Image (cartoon, rainbow, N blue to C red; front, top):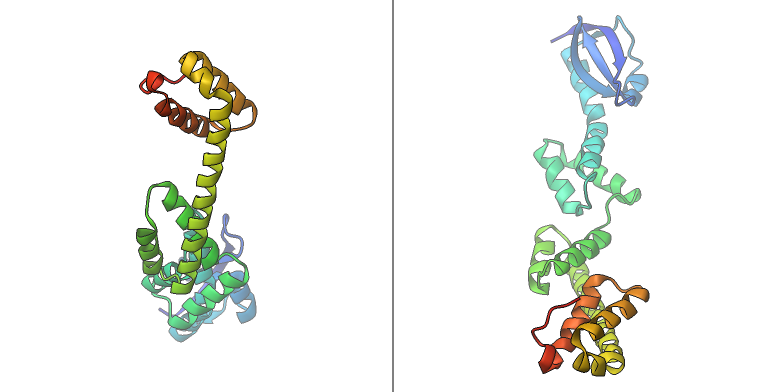
Length: 223
């Protein structure tokens, strides 16, 4: 409805947003820059067309705020942000403008998103095919998916080689001790690796590998 501006109030938690009151009732919020550009003042009369134009000018600001909130908890793909904004009713022009703004600020980066997502899911036991399918579903380009999965395989191969090298070192140094004194040897090996900065998961994996190779302690408890 048409009405006169009776108050313009900056929002307490969002100083860049201004609540517009028409005839004493809060009617809508606008970005402060939109208010300034339009030269709005208390007493101005706004027709329905005036209000629609102001809200249209404010749409990019609302879309940016919504997108930043969506990205607050974790990385998203560009396509995920597009879909969220489309579902919120923003026009294609506003959606693409918002995505481009986020890309310029590096708030959106499909390469970073894909790498983090792939690493997280690989740690959770997902295979490359499942990870690739999910990244494709989230709109990540096929070429980028291939690059990320290839890098993940290389990292996994490197980690496997590093574990094999560490196990070989531990076997040479503590293999005989584990055979003679399973519990004592395990404690000494755990202490040796711990002092060199290895976490318990790595130490546990090396111990289990060596104990499995020693029949006498294959089923023995870890320290």
